[in-house]
Length: 401
Ligand SMILES: Cc1ncc(COP(=O)(O)O)c(C=O)c1O
Image 1 (tube, rainbow, N blue to C red):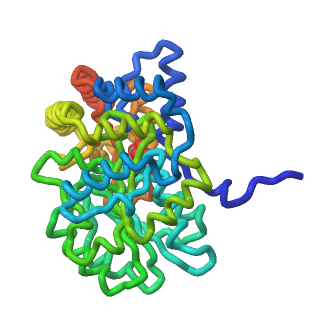
Image 2 (image 1 turned 180 degrees about the vertical axis):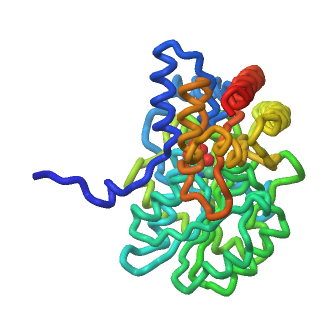
C-alpha cells in the first residue's frame, strides 16, 4: 500500500490558513463575520508598484531569472539593508526568494544535518513554520519561551541555558508574530554576547515586520559588531509594501548566499520575474515609501484602539505591542469566567457565538507554563471592524459570565 512519510504526516502547518477556510465557509453561509485572523495588510499595493508590474507584463518579463534574483533587485535589497541595518551589504550576498517564508526552510536545511542532534532555538509562541521546518528537516526543535513580564521577550539566562555545542541556529523575530514584541538594541547586544562563544551557531533574523516599529526605531542583530558574518537577515515586500500575494522576499548573508540560491534552484527555480521588477520599484521609489509611512500611521492608530478596547473587556489583559500588527491579550481570566477549558475553546465559542474570528495560542506553539491563555488579534483590518468586533466581544463576555 502507498504510504505518506511520517515526516510529512508530522509536519505542522500555519493554522491561520486552516481557520481561514472555516471563516470563509461561514462567510459563504451569510454569517456576519469579523475576522482578526489573517496577518496581511488590508491596503492595496501602492499604485506606482502596480504600474511597473503591468509594464513588466507588457515588456514580456515572463522568463525564468537567475535563482538568486535579477541584479536590479539584488542591488535594491542590498542598498536597503545597508541603509536600514547600518552594515555594508553587497548585492552578491543577497538572494531573492518567493517571500520571506521559504528562507526559513532553506536556512535550516543549509545549516543543520539530520541525525546529528543539531538544534534550532526559536521563540515560543512564534511563527509556526520555525518549528514545523525544524522538525521536517530532521533537526531538534528548542522552543524559547516568551514571557509577558518581559514584554514578550525571552529571559536571557534561559537562552544561555538552551545554547550548547549542538545549537546550529538561533531564530530571532522582531517585531514578533504573534505577540508584537520588539527586541531593543540592548537586548540584541546581550543576545550577541550569548551567541558569540558558539562558533557553529548561525542566527536567522526574521525581519519581515521591520517597517512596523511604533515606538522608537527598528534594530537588527546584524548591526551588532561581530554578528554580520553569522547572521542571515530576511525581509520581504509582503508586509512592508502590502504585497503578500506577490511573493517577494530577500535574504542576505555572504557565506550562505550561494547555498540559499541552490535551494531556490531546487524548489521554485526563481521568484516570479515580473514581481521582482515590481519589488525594485517598491524599494527604490519615494512614492512607495510615502505609502509605507501612511500605512504605518494607520496601524499605529488602530493599535491604540484595539489595545484600549481589549483592556475594556472583563477578563482580558493586553500589553501594548511595540510592532507588527498583532495584539496578544492574556485571556486566562476570561476563560475562567466563561467556563472555557482553554484559549482554543474560547476561540471556537467566540467564532460560533459572536462571529468574531481570532487565532489562539496553540496555533503558535506550545503554551508556556505559568503564562496562561492567549488569543491573537491581527489589526490589519478596518477601524470600523475593530470597533464592531470589540463591542460584540465585550457584550458577549458580559452577558455570559
Ligand atoms: C514572522 C513571519 N515571518 C515570515 C512570514 C512570511 O512572510 P512572507 O509573506 O514574506 O513569506 C510571516 C507571515 O506572516 C511572519 O509572520
